[in-house]
Length: 198
Image (tube, rainbow, N blue to C red; front, side):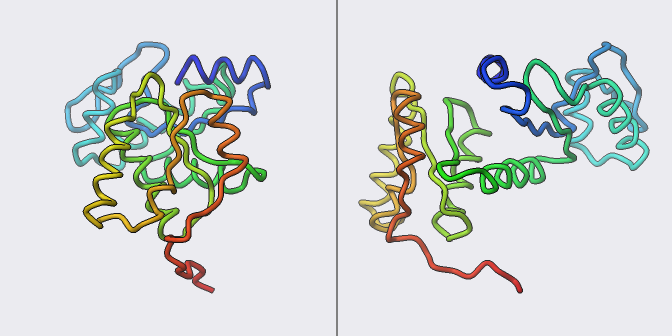
């Protein structure tokens, strides 16, 4: 992701990329360590471990000071916002896309568990009618082929309703992914739920 972000920033400026980083993934740039009340250190590995455990408000304040004083808001990777947790990160990322211009949507690069979880959540939000934006898997060298096979199997077994397999689009090339977002149409199988509380 870093190289992609740097390339987008070099082409379109720092506002082209807005990253949301949870506390647990923040590491002090100056290499210093702060000992937390629970005895762990907030180094590159320790921040994540500390936040996985139950930590005190004082510990959170230490992490807050570190993140806001050592991580610049604008970098070669674009604009960075530090957030308290993964749920906030995902909500803000989705809000950025949903507030975007027509053709805005989600493109998933090859990744691991976190990427898969985020893709499935945004697909589910589409299926539930929470949003109507396109979701594209950038299927570099067939990376997502097994996931696409699983989706076809789940449709065949009737765990995914007919038509909903088209919520997620697969493309091999970046240009095709962008075009797929521009031409995205919601599927007929989506649920028509009312998510407005007012």
